[in-house]
Length: 73
Image (cartoon, rainbow, N blue to C red; front, side, top):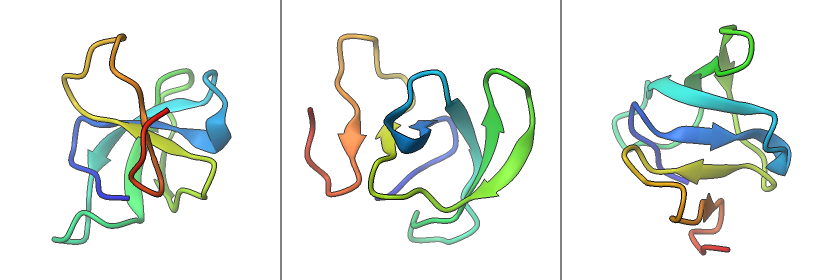
């Protein structure tokens, strides 16, 4: 899983737990990520698990999220 600031992260596959990646400390884009919760605004350092997925920045609602293994739904 590789991210850039602006990507959206769905935690544990739960669409009510969405955050925006606001920083990627590692230069290769790998976790952990600094994420701001869309619901609460809370900011945390997150290491996504295998049930989490990334939605690329600028992707519309018709685009499927990327799974941690790089495939799409």
